[in-house]
Length: 129
Image (cartoon, rainbow, N blue to C red):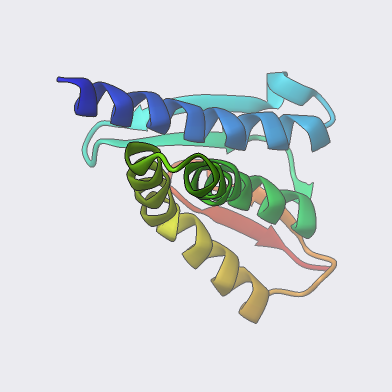
């Protein structure tokens, strides 16, 4: 029972970190952020309705994996906590989709692009100058 609850909490925190990071850069801060679940695929999401600079969007995309995965793994090794290490590894694997978007964006998009969350898919729209 504890493992599913832990995973649920980590998923919520993961999406919250996306939202906090994007809200820092958004003009309307948290008013530009929305959270939800795509029920057909059971995919939780966080979206920002305002366009952000490329580095801002990508930083917000990477932060949950860096904080919960990388940071959690470092703390787990330093404190010798195997359960925390497994949770951190799970968060690194869970961030795979985020890093796929980052890689695609780095390889394909121009530096001065503006990024905005796609209105109805788990993706983003790129506006280039």
